[in-house]
Image 1 (cartoon, rainbow, N blue to C red):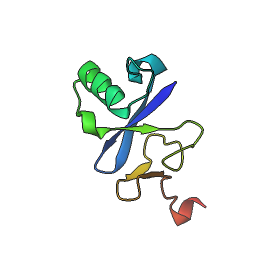
Image 2 (tube, one colour):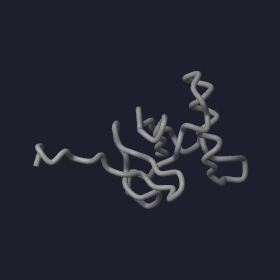
Image 3 (cartoon, rainbow, N blue to C red):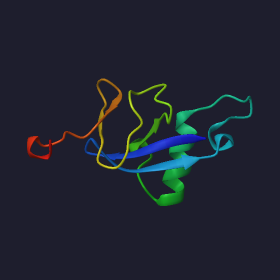
Length: 87
């Protein structure tokens, strides 16, 4: 399964799961852009805001959830900060 986070202004708003064939071309190679295009067309959202992520954290740091951050310079997802009073 392929996973994509929808990121707006550096924050994850939602995470989507796609079947691998959606992101695989005719030669059997996976492309992030195919998933971005599919999700943008399906939901009427901005394709570039869909960032592929890894459930097993094999790339882009950690697996994100709603409220997590995304750093485009480092190309990683980040956990939300916990306020001191919550500790």
